[in-house]
Length: 166
Image 1: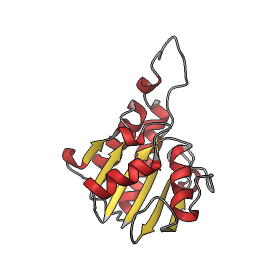
Image 2: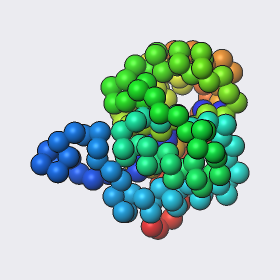
Image 3: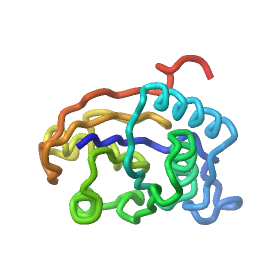
């Protein structure tokens, strides 16, 4: 299995007056442009994705939708899951993937520090962050059998700055 982990792109700043509910913060226009650039780079890499699982928070959904459209996936190939909410349980996410989505190529779109903790758990067996995904950052893990522990190999990690100027 190839497991791709993508952090949402740049979102509106936290502002209780404008966004009393943090889940409603959208991507900024710069975040949309950055994510479009990232998605195009992934398309050029011939990234194969069977399904996208995304946090239901607006900024993650918008990030996932840009990726879905650019990678030419159908609408039903994007599924929202509470397991990718901030402070979600990595173990429950893994159980959901194993039970519902035993696919070859899965893209997860979520938040920090949760995604970096998931990467560390799958690479090292410990959830203490080994890497930090920048906004719009993505990594690819190769997994033989997905478990809540050391089971993956890091194939690659892309920081958005590596893709050149915005």
